[in-house]
Image (cartoon, rainbow, N blue to C red):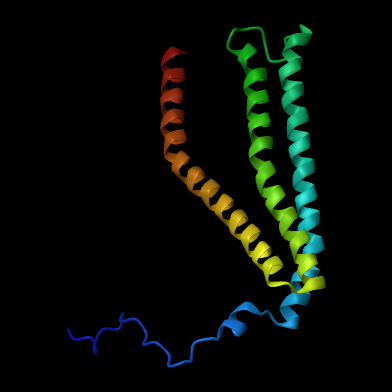
Length: 167
């Protein structure tokens, strides 16, 4: 089969003149306006992320202190006594991890608003940098989440089999 008959052949490159350095570094007025309008929403989302991290830290401390009150909130067996510290560790770790995307989103919002006001190319680069950081963070979280599914599945099957054989 020749390339002329191949339906999966990549398209030919268009004969366009490359952009000059000035055209590549400038954004249109509409882009500046859109980034400026997105800025307050991004700052709002960043602040909500900070508040969520604060709540997670508070819950982590509560779950850490709750078993120390003497009440058997999670039960009296030796395994149930580990529930509080495990939940505390989970919430504290989650609060720390989720602080970073909240920070990136908040900074992206601040830079977007600043870019609408001054139109400086370095400010636009800052917006792009924080967007890259947010996308990279969520990409890594997605990969880790997808990779953990088989592990969780195997552990669940083993735990279910052990539970059904002992009872």
